[in-house]
Amino acid sequence: MYTLGIETSCDETSCAILEKRKVLSNITISSLKEHKKYGGVVPEIATRAHLKNIDKVLELSQRKAGILLKKIDLISVTYKPGLFGALVVGLNFAKALSLAINRPFVGVNHLHAHLFAPFLNQKRRIKFPFLGLVVSGGHTGIYRVDDFDKIKILGQTRDDACGEVFDKVAKAYGLGYPGGPIIDRLFKLKYKNDFRFKCGRIGFDFSFSGIKTALIYKKMEMEKKGTFGLKVRQRLVSSFQYAALETIIAIVLDAKNKLKIKSVVCGGGVIANEYLRKRLKEEKSKGIDLFIAPKEYSGDNAAMVAGLGFYLYNKGYQNSNIGLKAEAN
Image (tube, rainbow, N blue to C red):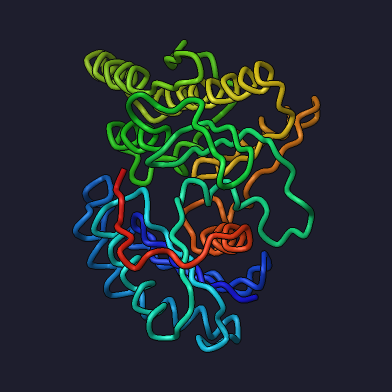
């Protein structure tokens, strides 16, 4: 069975073709460069980029997979959450293709698709229940997953998403955009406690706005003293990254112990962070059954959307109603 995936929730225009869970192609074009000067994603720019690129990524995806549209059995598309205009482009494109080639389509939640990413190119049976962790530029949440149609949110950010705070701190510190990869490259474990930053948490909920404010005030304080150089910035962002990511680890372990669930599945753009991956793997050695998205499928991509759509369709989800609407939140 061949599934075409379409993902346009933010600034990545992506199409993928899967044979069951095997990825045959996954083509993504990002409009990131157009957003850099603004220090974040501009919805109107992202939407126009999707309109410009979606035909191209579909063609490239077919070419790489060696599969023509007439061989596609199912279309899977992100319909929530994300930027409304961006979602509309992908969803309407999927509807038009569904009508044109007379194939069913399934609308999926791309946050749930992030939790499917670790199972791409894998034949092993997915075991439930598991804890799901999604950490990205727009979302931070922890879930109980009894099946991919039975997902309950246990905790989420009460303010900024984790990746969003990395971007804002990097912008305030003059480091560039996107901030996550830049701060990860600057990170030195030896500086982890040079500044005692803390992230808020309430139960399984996250809060990152406080640490963001603390970093900005610390910058202002050091600028007044004339000590805000590159070395100090490295020490500050190292302490920041350590505090933010260790808070995530702590909440995951707390949820695992309280719910007595052994398996943890991780996805989302921030999962590509080297320190976070290293720490999660350290916890795996202590008894966690860990599934972590490969870096190439950690950010928004159509392969994970196709994979989840294939899974849900084979559980009995049939053609999504042609009136299905995009949901930003």
